Length: 385
Image (cartoon, rainbow, N blue to C red; front, side, top):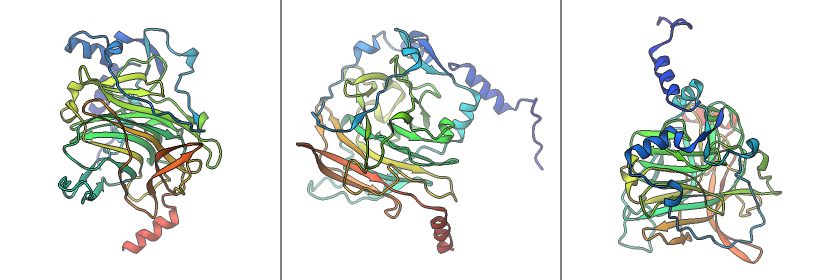
């Protein structure tokens, strides 16, 4: 039997975690923007620029008469951080342990290349999700020649029930090769130690990946928006009040950094430096909008979105709307054509529809589902034997 280390004798892994903690900021603190270690590291290696003034974003808003409520993204701790500081979460050893217990980031592959010879035909490929993950998404056609400089969405806020190592999320995802950027909301006890609906970001650069600010990579410049803020006071009620939040990822036209922007006012939250990427050093070629869930092997799949299948009504369904992409010239393109995919239509469904609200219409990605119950999971397992 393998000998268990004494509690008072640190293991090599413990020592490594302690070193990681010591290099990061220590619950939320208002940290002077140029004391942020990621920001300092960025400016030590790059020519001096003003990160706030330098962002040249080109997103144009779509006028909307939506009756949904907008969730505030302002941090309420003592009215926010003072001018010149940003909210940085204190990183603990427990945070790093939980980060290591996170499942590998969800990725996908296609079993055939996109045929661009006929623009009227649908792509003939199969979307393959990683083990443990299920998705219900709409995406841009899988054309490797796409040159996309950003994307955006407004997504409704829900709180699907998860437990243990399950998680359930709505997210905007842009990708090229093995480089991925994601932003959305997420219910994830492993990441957050609770079951509240929270903002999240995630980046993957080759084999390196990280959530929020648990490791270097994202440079935060906003004084009011922490990257794991809770939306628990603004959760949509199916058939009742709907709450939503707007988010964008936009490539800076000047220096190629990828910016996270929130709200209709395009509030700058921070950026991922261009230099940490290979594929996303230039443009993305794929964008997705919709839902994703995870459960470990042998555990039933959790609910997604509103926890119900979509019925074609934005006041009942989980949705992503006002979905846009930016082309290589920085022009805002309202998305009116996507390819939809769900891994298991018995658990989750997705549709891309044009819905009318008041006197205006918008395209919606409607997604969600109940997942599977314990009894359904057991019957599926017995059926596979």
